[in-house]
Image 1 (tube, rainbow, N blue to C red):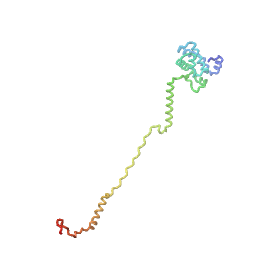
Image 2: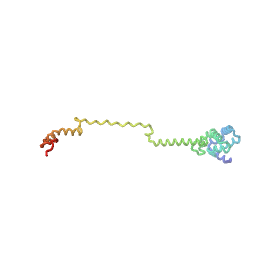
Image 3: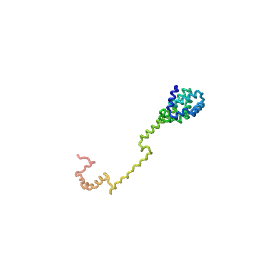
Image 4: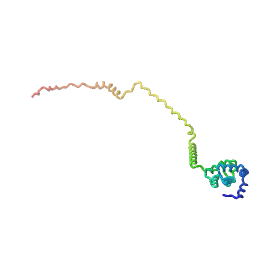
Length: 213
């Protein structure tokens, strides 16, 4: 986008003195020229690079759009535009970045213009960040007593053995022994009651004697 001289002048007058001095500093102009020659830019493209650098310092171009503007205006590739932006940031923007922050209403420091990273790098960073957040959440849920090294529980005490009952003075007899002793004790009484069988009163017949008629 082209700006009129009046628009540029109005913007310039609203800048803090530090940005005004940096914008028209001889050192800034020389730094831009050296950067352009280093990347083999033609004189006209070095002038365009100076214009885009000035637009950022005037607050007309946001720092995050600086690289895309270089690609569009100078017709260079992404790699060259990133290198140009990094060197402009180091030589021109860094000394006055606090004033550029206020000018563009940025909450964070302007270390360098935003550079789009390859998707693989962004994916790795996202996975790493997600893993760290998950581990932190798990650690917060674990009770503090379980976060340290758990001490082994003391073994349960073994109760002493119960004392054995005292042995009887006379060993117990079995039921068979008791019954036998009872029969032995009763034998005399039973024997006294048994009477001898009387002898047969009738004569016994001779089996070999022939019967009489």
